[in-house]
Image 1 (tube, rainbow, N blue to C red):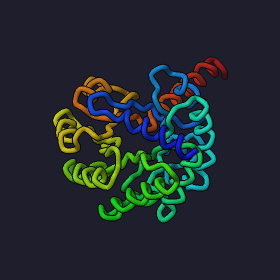
Image 2 (image 1 turned 90 degrees about the vertical axis):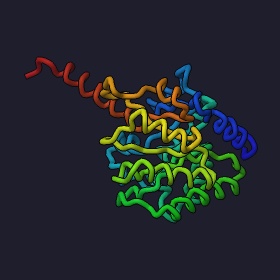
Image 3 (image 1 turned 45 degrees about the horizontal axis):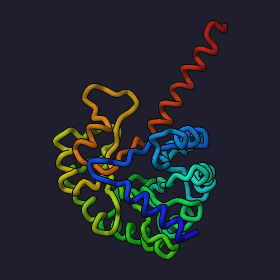
Image 4 (image 1 turned 120 degrees about the vertical axis):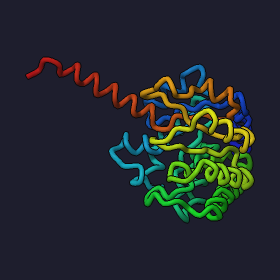
Length: 262
C-alpha cells in the first residue's frame, strides 16, 4: 500500500504548479465529499477543520485527534473510492501527537495535510523554530510510513494574528526550506490581500503558495481563482466556505418550508 500511496502523493504534489494551480473546494462531510468527488474539475479532495467541526456541532478548537479521525475516515473512504488524492486539514498537528496524527491520516489514505503555526485551542502563535520543527517532524513521520513525497501545506498565520505580510512570508520561506510543498499565507476573515500583496507573496515564495478565494459574499474587489492563477500561485482553497454556503441555503429552504405557517 505504501508504494501505491506514495505514487498518489507524488502525483498530488505535481498538481501544485505556479500559474496552473491546484484548486481545492474543501469538503466537510460525506454529502459534500460525494458532490465534489463527482465534479469534473475536482482533482483532489481536501477537508476544512472548521467546517467539519461546525457540521458536527463543535467549535474548531473542540476538534481533537480522537474525535476528528472518525469523521475524516468517512470522507477518506469516498476519496479512495473515487481515486482522488486526499489531503487533511490537520489544524496544528495536535501538540506532541503530531507523528501519531500523520501516521493516522496516512492509514486512512491521506497523502497530504494542512499544518497551522498557531495553536488551534489557544489561538497563540508558535515560535517560528517550533513551527519549522513540526513541519520536519510531520514529513519524517510520513517517510517512516513509506510516503516520502507526502505534501505539507504549511499555514502561516502571522498576518491573520496582527503581524505584517512580510512576517507571514518569512515564516513561509522557512517552512518551504523545511520541506513543505506550499506555504499557505492565511489572511483570516477580516483581512484581504490585495493585488500588490499577492504579487509580493508569489514573488518571495517562488509561486509555491496557497491563497484562498472568497466564494460566499463575493464583492467586485475580490480576486478570483483565475486572478490568482494569473499571478502565479500554485494552490487555491476556500476553507469552510462551502459549508457556510450550504448552511445558508438550508436556512433559506427552511424559511420557505415554514412560510405561511402560524
